[in-house]
Length: 105
Image (cartoon, rainbow, N blue to C red; front, side, top):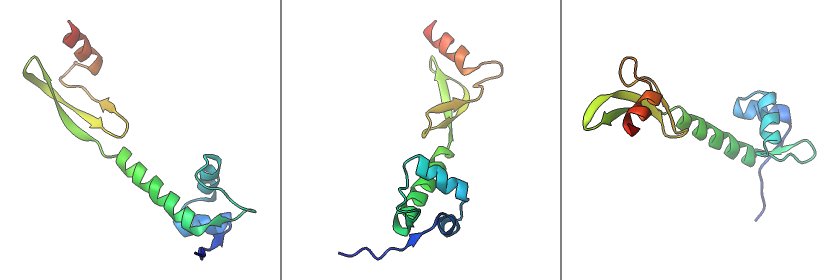
């Protein structure tokens, strides 16, 4: 089977996926793209851009989570499943650190 995808320069690659040349160089340094004689295979470029876009979207999808301590709702926090990060106070003056201390006490 013959690959008919086009080979693009860095500048053409950036224009093809609507990114800056710096981004294309960053993807190369991160090992996401492997140029051959300064050119990048278009089909690979499109797949990398799609993968990066999907990953970024997932990182920004956080949701409210209800926090329950000893059977009582104490509030909500924002949780991002992609990063595993929890942000915010569950009640005025109660931080996640205080909540952990309360839970272990």
